Every structure is written in C-alpha cells, then in structure tokens.
Length: 235
Image 1 (cartoon, one colour):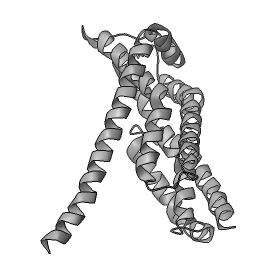
Image 2 (cartoon, one colour):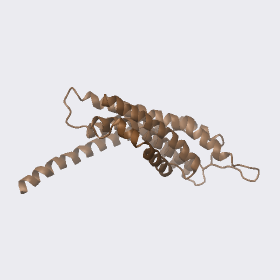
Image 3 (tube, helix red, strand yellow):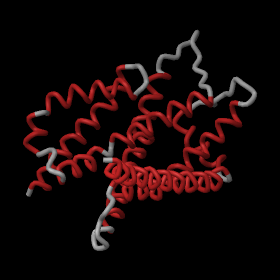
Image 4 (cartoon, helix red, strand yellow):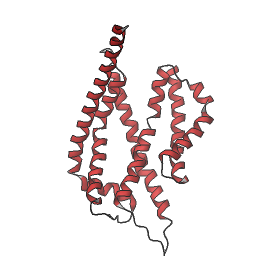
C-alpha cells in the first residue's frame, strides 16, 4: 500500500517540478522582454494614450513612474507571449511523440494569433468607442480629467479580457478533439451560452452596460465560430 502511494506521489511531484520549471522560464522571458520594452516606454506610452484624446494627469508623486513600469511589464508580457504560450502548451500536452511535438508549436502560434486579434480589436475598436462614449458626458460644468494610472488600468483590463476571450475557438477545438463537445451540443446550448456570455461580460468589464455589450457581441460571434470549429473537427 505504501509503495503504491509513493508511486502516485512521484508522478505528481514530477508534474509540479515541470510546472515550476516552465513558470520560471516564462517569468524570465517576461522580465527580459520588459527590460527591452522599458527602453521604449515613451513611444509605447504615446501609442497607448492616443485613444484618450485629451492630456492625462498623474495625481500622486510616484504614479507616472510606477505606471511607466506597469506599461513596460504589460508590453514585455505581450512581447514574450509566444514563449509563454509555448510553455503553457508544452505543459498541457505532455507525452507527445516526436512527430506530434509540432502540434505544440501550432497550438502556441494559434493561441498567440487569436490573442493578438483580440488585443488589436480591443485597442483599435472597443477602447476608442468606449472612451468617446464616457467623455461624451462632459459639459460646461463637468470637465473630464483622466488619471494616467487609472487610464492604463482601464485599457489593460479590456485588452487582456479580449485577448483571453478570443481563445474560445482554441479551447473548443481541444474539447472537440477530446470528444467532450460537439457542434450539435453547442447549437443546442446556444441560448444558455448567450446568457452566460453576458454574465461573464458583466464580470470582466467595467461596471457599465455599454462595455458589457461591447464585450458580449464579439463573444457571441466567437461562439458561432467555435460551433463551426467543432463541426470541422467532427468531420
């Protein structure tokens, strides 16, 4: 009995060690990339703050400096994302044959592609629309003044939320490959999925209906794409 427990513990320990190693590699990649992006933080900051349309302010002595570091870390993470995704898929898809290991590269590339599409969609479509909407409440006796730190937090939150949501086709592809979902199941569950999508959009977006709708509509479209993906896998 004790020998069997030791046999069960050994693989578990190996999995934790593998996870730790891949987390360390991902962390190193992000830090190195962040050092590079910090050298160009002024250019990155100008790009990120462009949708605001008005000068930003910082209201605490350290806000500008700390927010610049935050920008470098965010940009560094995005720059190192291919390495991070490769580590993630290498951990989630263990035991592949040498001829199948290219699947890890394909999964990492597909994940990065969909994440990048989500980030670009959020930055060039959703954020400008939402910023114009909120600044539209300005009036003669109500002047908008955006804090630098709060603005970056708002933008990064939306960008990462969309990047994560755009992973839905990849997730469905894997579940369909494993036989856990089918296109018929997804079609029958469409109404429940739409309800869940609006709940998720309410949780991961700022607390306003406008942002929730902006998040929900692409998620519904991605769900429809996922149905087609599951259908192709089924064939």
